[in-house]
Image 1 (cartoon, rainbow, N blue to C red):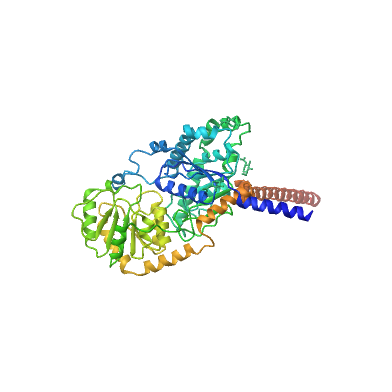
Image 2: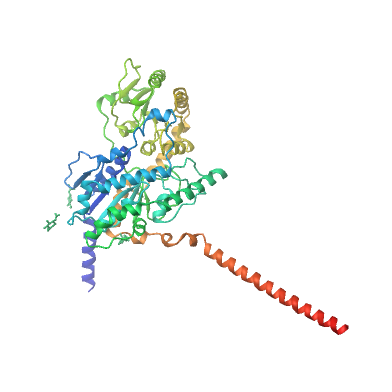
Length: 522
Ligand SMILES: *[C@@H]1O[C@H](CO)[C@@H](O)[C@H](O)[C@H]1NC(C)=O
Ligand SMILES: *[C@@H]1O[C@H](CO)[C@@H](O)[C@H](O)[C@H]1NC(C)=O
Ligand SMILES: *[C@@H]1O[C@H](CO)[C@@H](O)[C@H](O)[C@H]1NC(C)=O
């Protein structure tokens, strides 16, 4: 008997270790940085021997035998016209993104993806099966539908620092007294006013969540698909709080030491290749010859420097020309008569440049991927935030002492020069980033290995139910002990009543006695 059990155990063990899983990865957001994060998930899973189906607006030229890509580039048409236009930001025509807008925008993206011909074909195919579904969480839970259609465990991937909109899906809200909202630009410890503002954002956003109508879309687009496969469709409410895991593009070296639930796994940095590709020969020569170091300037992939006003461009070139450092500027157009120390490149291998020992400073828009890379490679930054989470990323970097912030404005060039000179002349910025880089790298395994491990763990344990937080099943009024408050109030009321009653009884008793006595005396 023992032998038999042992044999079965061995079989199960080897089977579970060598199992290749079929994994559906859905990243429908039409943004380059989102697709970098999505494709990096895919690459890690392929490398670990799994079969991956990847739904993306940015199809990669990768012909791996175990990769199937579903092209949803038609989602690109949903991006608001001129939404990422630098000039409109400069002229203050674009408001900072708010939660309400994101809910609306992302629901459109999710619906368009579910309605896409190729995606529909995939979802309707009765022979198609998966073991696990990984969906990017972006202000919408309709993505949970993929897990319901294939009846498999769901993993969210959150591209930001942990925040309450994500933790509420696997645990509960984070306390607004010391946890910022995803769109907030405050960093704890909060002032009184900041604390009130964070509470207000949670209350207002909770109201928006209460009245949202994702369920209608689910009933219309997804329920029939599940029923056609002969299963009863779960309610959307059950479905959206049923994820096995949240993989977070965060790490304590980059953000706060937020108290997160067991089923939240921080894996920031997984998009950075462990072995950096060598520099192309021309860039290599430029970097090796830079006696005073290299400043790398890039405003990211979705902010076109060509949209910059001409005067700003001229001033930048002039200011860079006055520095003794070599500048590598990722820019989409060429300039006549560039100063000798300024090099414009249309495409830049960012990790390879940042990892070069001569790279002394990174001027960036402060996107999360770029700030992560600056910590990964230990290069201090000047941040010029323009959109969304770039403000808070740069603010965090400033607070941690490895960055200076410059406001994106018509007059920023002078400010930028001062910031560059301060960082290069004060060694504390460099010391600080090296310390953070040490914390970032000092993990038991690489973030990519951790990603693969947790995905496989969920598959092996059929949904990792043991990681689920008990908080998910505790209603709001119980968390705040409102029921206890009600009981205490009722008991107090009853006591008060009883005491009043006794008092009245005693009073009337004494009064009648008094009257009797008086009568006797009379
Ligand atoms: C493709 O997946 C199969 C399992 O389905 C695996 O055995 C094989 O090694 C994978 N191929 C590659 C090139 O990774
Ligand atoms: C599903 O598989 C069955 C049996 O292998 C086959 O007869 C059928 O045509 C397949 N259906 C689709 C839609 O591919
Ligand atoms: C919730 O997830 C578990 C594990 O993946 C699964 O067994 C269960 O059917 C899911 N429930 C709903 C309502 O989707």
